[in-house]
Length: 404
Image (spheres, rainbow, N blue to C red):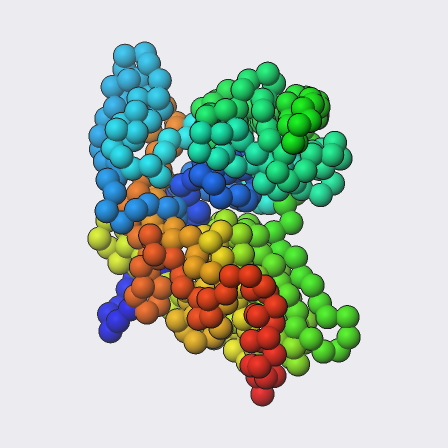
């Protein structure tokens, strides 16, 4: 996703769709509004049907059995019940907290996210254990930002429904204007009322959903001829690899490049591999297994192998971002600076159920080029830094020279 062993390159799967590896797990329905759960914040997207996905799964945890899930769905449909609900119950009993079931409408919405677009109000939320949802990020220029919503505001209710103790997926569904496990969200222009709290202040605001584009790559170039270029990637949506390649071509050879993956929630692993290709001249990026069958991902040839490179990571660096950091570290291409990453490295694969919904179940795990398991372990930086990590990273980068 190590050793003197050969692996098959990623295969094509149903209907000829190119194998796409994508962040799964805790993101769930949050993709539609750029929202996720379990104490980590950020925006991400979900895959279209018939694509392989990466997610988080403890190495020794149980996994849902595909046959049992499909059987439960089929039997429920025959009895005139909801196939997706029956399948979700089987997944829940399995103990596999990262496998999940999606309706066709949800997958349609997730496809939009793959293109870096969504209909929503432009905020990210997280759900502290046992508490109320709180805003973890606000998209500049979006409805929430224009209404004065700020990071740290507590989201008390959505359209009058209390958020306390509710799953983030349910909160997101309300923000999108659909019932949980419903068929997609509301159209742009539809209203949604938020009840908010900031300190002792409580207030309500009605926002109107709009079509937004996520800015997943931000490049800061030095003002003069010298100094490092900083490329911040918040998630791997379509086109991310191409944007990074363009940034690399424009980067100052004298200053090198600082690749900031802090808080990166993952995304399309094909784009993570494309980003790795900007810095590597071919070779292995990661290996992964699907029900015991080992496969691999390779960088394209022609990347810039001379530009000094430092990668910044932290505990919010996940999945596809961990895969990238681990590959550049193992290949000796970059110095990784920051704090240990999240540790999200299991593989989910989707399959259609009889009612058109999609079951996404854990089937394996991926490893870095040297064979390190990421799931549950994360990536340990070469230089572990808590405070002032970016300042230390810039110091390291200045010491790497010009790459001549």
